[in-house]
Length: 245
Image 1 (cartoon, helix red, strand yellow):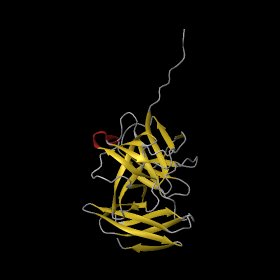
Image 2: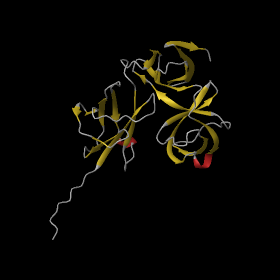
Image 3: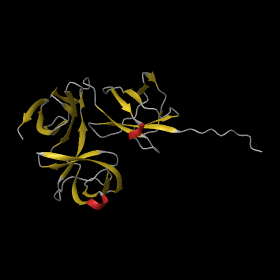
Image 4: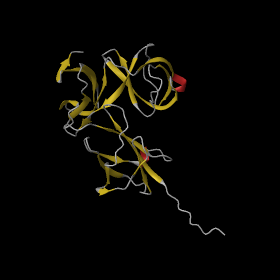
């Protein structure tokens, strides 16, 4: 006769932490999470994945703090998450005390989001877009690159880019998109990884990139409720210069 008790647990939330400047997972035993102001228990499952067991599925405000990065606060809204595997991707911004980053900051009326892609250093380029399958085939110099779950932009020269998210990497040179593309792109159009910034309720924004001791050029995207604007910025010797587009 088996008298062993059966203990059932439910995964109620998965948080995936990524350094927005590098695209690398952030795994640290010193990460702290709060639910509505109360410290939470979590388990690190590697590759920046933090799981929360049996916390319930009521909406709440989460705050997190990671050494070396700006703290973040956001709403966990289960109505917008996958019912079977509720997860949230959080893109961490290195703190201003980090000597290896450069900062672009300012204020724009009505600004809701700011992000950027690096010019001149694409991670790959487009080979073909198959609309019916929401799939892109790629010209990939690094066949080991894992694109799943990441945000990218297909560039229109230096005038703009279309932001897309990879929902699944089918093979080293083919990915499925979370949503269909709005435009057509020529073969060889460069694809760059998106770097996220932060915007407060007053339109103050902060965007940070890694200082690699070389000339760095970025196409920055400013989004308001009505329009999207692009500007090119260049870091030379740690100094910031705005270029005309």
